[in-house]
Image 1 (tube, rainbow, N blue to C red):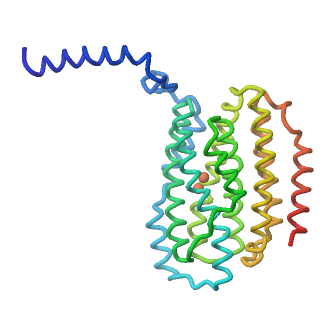
Image 2 (image 1 turned 60 degrees about the vertical axis):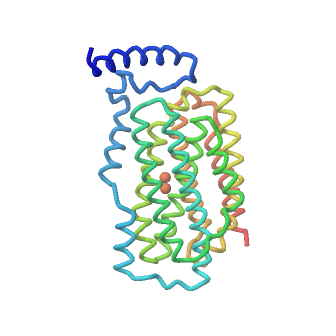
Image 3 (image 1 turned 30 degrees about the vertical axis):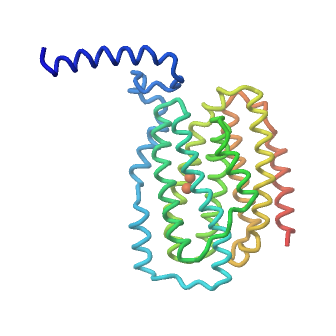
Length: 307
Ligand SMILES: [Fe+2]
Ligand SMILES: [Fe+2]
């Protein structure tokens, strides 16, 4: 018998033995070897993955060409401090988004969703890099806002796919998208605007992932978990309100009417959130939309009158 034949036979023998013992090892929930993985189960997710590749951009290349075109930005110190305050929250959020997308990649049970999340991990990594480069031109970044941290830590820690997706794809991504849009529409620094144009398009796609996939995930959870998500959403709303109040002054310095953008963002957030919940078994087991609208109006009044 040749050495090759020995390795062939011995290999088979050892592999069968090792695989036989795997019933005692921790279970892998998703089966990477299933024939089912050949099929596209969610065409909309497949389309989103294809779009991700089509819209791929190189953060280093974009940053360098913007810097070359517009030169080093000379920003007054007061505006620098205001930018650092707002952008630091976004920057920390981008790091958490990258980590949470990679956690979800391992937690979701559908191949199409895993591919979209793989693309999101690299998209968030690009956002992190873009902010690292931009923030290093402004100075030292402040510590994470404690209330924003409470939300981000919760999203990182939870083992619930549904709660993680509500926290990241619905809430954090919407807040990020509106902060980006407010900054690029109101504060006309061209390098930042150039970067935000690319990033806002990615963030809109990430909210789109919630639209397409979150109903599937929520339909599989229990009523108890749904109650937990509703309570967490109320808690997160409180934390986000506290963070936004603290950003009001920085917003004013940069020409951003924080209350106006909060109103715009909340309106869209509620539309997407209720569009999702109406596609699930909890359509009648949620906070009614008009109650949520009353709560958001009250918060808007608080933000508007805060000095
Ligand atoms: Fe991002
Ligand atoms: Fe994102």
